[in-house]
Length: 300
Ligand code: COA
Image (cartoon, rainbow, N blue to C red; front, side, top):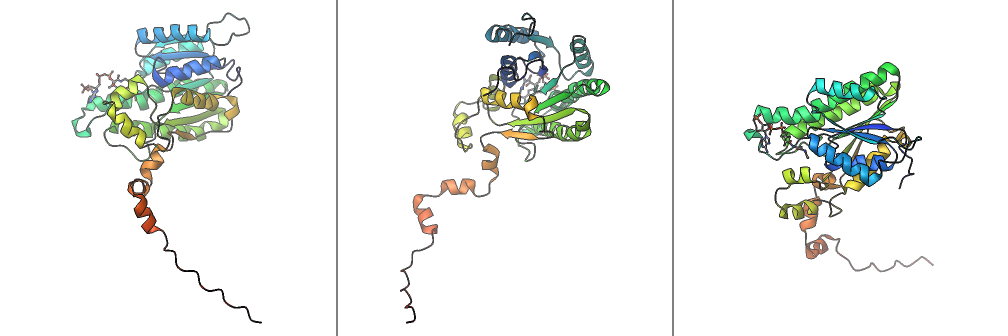
């Protein structure tokens, strides 16, 4: 799908890159020649992912000297602004980043009236404040030096509609989306591009164990999707690679939905109704066939 050197010489940080969608993107970026930093809260998870991706991709395409290590991991809780600043400073000590992918997230199903303040703070802290911390730390450095930068935020399909039972996530991701569009305009004329992906259901251990607690719910989830299936991490990683590449250089402030049409199916007023109708009911709703009128005789 892509030229093998599509992301060569790009230095990319992926928050929450040790697992799930972040890990899938890290692999794809490495395969396309990028140098990748992954960060997350758990050192042991990051170290395992770093080892695995290094072996699986041969460390990514070789740089000019053929020896440079292409994957690095850094433990950091993005909720902690000072820790983020220190992490970004340590990366910049080698060289500036070119791409920041804000992927770290927290989410769980819960009735909103049962949530503690701490639960709200935890999810909003990771999703919204975490994105703000990394974006400001990178953005200020890019603006100060005129270095071009790309930000890719991973949002969700329920930012516009909201969603019951995931309210901290819905409000945090809506804020993330507003940040994406606002800064795409404010910083666009100074070399910074900012976009987002709104993925639908894509099976990963972290998300599905929290959001689809019973296997039979997966059958229902697939029925809600026009394509009748979940997305794949490979499809997600391909879209991410395209959006951060120079080939997407004129895409700015966009939120690309990748959900097989799921949210549109849920939103369409007559969609569910139409699926319930029987063949006979469809038949009765068609215009009745009437006998053809006799052809009028043409005047002689
Ligand atoms: N229902 C209700 N409240 C919950 C909860 C749940 N399922 N899970 C956690 N919380 C509350 C805790 O009770 C706590 O509240 P308190 O401070 O009032 O006691 C607060 O959320 C923080 O949880 P804690 O377990 O202390 O750890 P954390 O802040 O490190 O947790 C989470 C982060 C909550 C997002 C956790 O689910 C997590 O680490 N998730 C992994 C990443 C993830 O969710 N990815 C998203 C994939 S879609």
